Amino acid sequence: MSEHKPNNSKELAKDILRTFGSLKAKRKPFEPLWRNVARFAGPMWFGWTGEPEHPQTREVEILDTEVRRALTIYARGMLSGACGATSTWFGLEFEDPDFQKWAQNRRSGQAKAWLQKLEQSYYTDLWNSGFYSEKETCYFNKGLFGWDSMYLDESVAGGLRFNSRPLHECYIDRDYNDVVDRHFRAFSMTARDMAEKWGRSNLPDEVRRALDSRTTNGEETSFKVVHAVFPRKDRSESLLRNNMAYASFYLLNEGEGQVIAEGGYEEMPYIVSRAYRLPGTPYCYSSGTEALADVQMANEMKRLLLEAGQLSVAPPYLVPDDGFIGRFSFKPRALNYYRKDSQGSAADFRPLELGGDPRFDLELFKATREDINQPFHTDLFLSVQRRIASGSTPTATEITELAGERMFLLTPLLVNEQVESFTPTFARLFALKMRRGELPPAPSDAQGREFKAVYKSPLMRAQLEYRVNNILSTYSQAAQMVAMTGDTSIWENFDNHAAVRIVAEQRGFPQEALRELEDAMANMKAKAQAQAQSQNMQGIQQSLGDYSGLAKAPEDGSPADLLMRSLRGGVQ
Image (cartoon, rainbow, N blue to C red; front, side):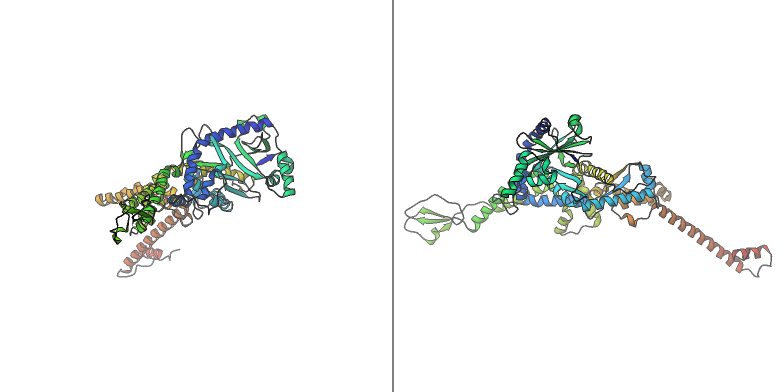
């Protein structure tokens, strides 16, 4: 981001903060629901609308933690399935399909080598800039609240960095195409941090005073700061100092407000993706909000089951007493005195029979926990484990079918992930690398050609598994038709090499272990030539054998003699 000295226009600061107030009003109706979801997800999430609590802090009333387990499976399943750090989950291809096919089928070529080199540099950048750890946090946010915010920019150390922003700091809005193009982030900074980032001379007076008092009493004073990023066209050009596509302002959000620093971005640095969109709002619902009713029910049922367990092993007792009758207590081990005549016995001291069958409650509790897991799709991520736990060992084909059967449930998530997360991430990453001079020089045949990212993660491949199934089933039915009719020309309808390459790509076969198409064709031609040569030699041997069986050798210079010598290579 490019930054300039602060613009001290009070009117500009008020205008931007008024926009911030509008964004806060749009988000406010969702906050009670999100706060309730976060309360059951654990102390580390309960502070999403404020400062996070210490992980050891635990609310006593939260007894069931099934939603936390489901959330963890969802986040890690999405990470490993959509963009795992140890998998090849994307590749680069040229936008022009004809040029891509030409470049892909060549045994060697500068365009293909350049694209592969660029692809490898992307993987290196994602690994070194913290993408994978931050993306896991994004999936946690998306599972609970339905959206996430990832910041991508240059780091202070000089490289690139990804950072998943806490959602309690983020406020978003969208354009008419439902694309998030406004992002306001409200957070706190100490006077010392503000001086290190923008310089003492650029700080408002109250911040400088706090900075001076710190040197006297050692106290750290924090201030509320807003980082506003919005399209430059939203404001009058005369008020902005640069012509970048997105304006960027850091403002002091205290008192009347004041612009601390002004800058800009060529691309939106905050990459916001949403799980399930809602009409009329930039926000959305989530797996956590969908499961909230069952989460609350499971928590209450677990409380009742615990109480029933306590009452079954330590029930309240009835105790005879001839002088006093108190109020009944149903607490475990409580003593309830009741009036009894003098003819008492040991049988009069007995537990209080409450009735009820806790087994029914336990079955309902288990069913409710299954309902909690359903919105998080844990049945998909744990399908193989559950098959093994049931006593069966699924084959590789069955595992593929299990993923394919349930993949339609994740289609909305994967589509939004591609459109709102991966595509803008690669566009921003490419632009940053280009401005930093980190792109490999493009060869002449690739210059001016657009390229795109193609996603090849396990979940993406499972989504297209029907293509492989259609190919295999068609070949199987064609074989039956050949067997029935005896017409082997049926196979001429198929491009076997194209079909096997589609299957190999869909099943994740390593590209480096697959021959280039030119090499495969050359190998086929060499084998055909060798086979023809072998058949020719067999014919020669047969001819020699026939002449060897003659009653006498042919006369010198006769046609038969010349033919024999030619076959033996003796004629010059």
